Image 1 (tube, rainbow, N blue to C red):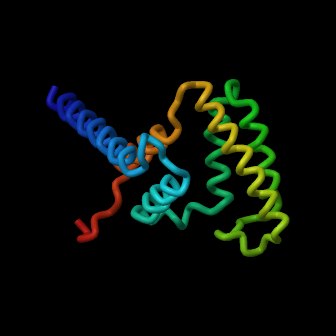
Image 2 (cartoon, rainbow, N blue to C red):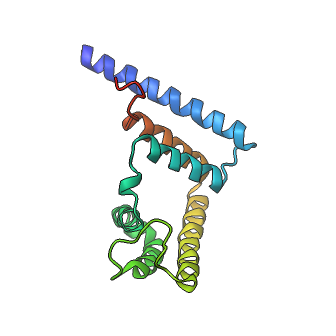
Image 3 (cartoon, helix red, strand yellow):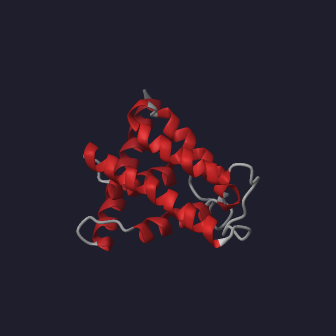
Length: 156
């Protein structure tokens, strides 16, 4: 019973932290809108705090997306097709360095177009499903921050 009580308290604290972060994010962005630049900054900060940038190569991030998409196969057929097109750009390139220094302008432009397709399908799917993608993304970042806390600065 004590363990269950501790778990319930932690869950309640996590929920409160998520609600607080979402509200702070809403106020900072204005009218509940979370911009892509703000979301990108939050994700970058999240990865840096955990020293995860070393794992966030383009290839690894794409494989993570493929895994997520495959989990929801039936409901996301169009998104899967777009992620498939995106993955073709990375096929046979081996590990790709951050910033795509070895890619020419045409390849980078094509990548941008395929990423935009994926984004547009995600935005449309979230709209059709009644999901506020900005709020959902903000909540997920906060939830992950609780699940994967950054190492403390003092080493404790």
